[in-house]
Length: 268
Image 1 (cartoon, rainbow, N blue to C red):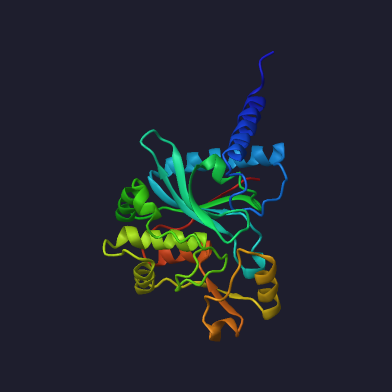
Image 2: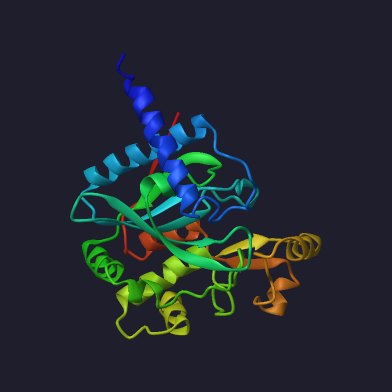
């Protein structure tokens, strides 16, 4: 008997997940818990990837800012946790360049993944969000994303989940994505300081999180990937933690006329 269409898709999905684990990417951006993904999780992740790919094809774009909901951040009035730059190859495949914290440590790396890997990374909610940049922004980003040296140019391995947007001591994932946008848009940007100056000039405003001293202390002691010592003392001790979020980044891109309005796709 020939396998059904669903059985074939599940077999492909399971194989893809196994390959991810074998390549060492299964725990990128996670806490390193030894918990294999369920068949249902794999199925939903691959379905979200397939539907997102179709939607991005239909948009006519070749570069988008693509985000996901990897954590529940609703207590901070945030819907999404992570984004990177997705671009379409000449072969018609969508790839995502993004930064991930390695296994809850204080170290991060830049990854290039397909949509399947991007949406198999332990999601809180099976939902994608993206914005389509203007044609000029797409052209500049597309050129940069073809050059691995430029992709890595502003990467800082030292990672903090709540890194201060106007400091270069640490760098979280969304911060790398925005600083890379600055690098693409302004040819004179050759450092993180210069990228941050461009973002300020263009009116980017980070999200302000209300995080009290007990939460800050607990986070710093128990999590290697959380630090607050790069934040100005006056803001830190008034419980105002500023950081780059997906929500603030995509809202700013639209406000700065660098992209269109956010588009979303959520599995039922």
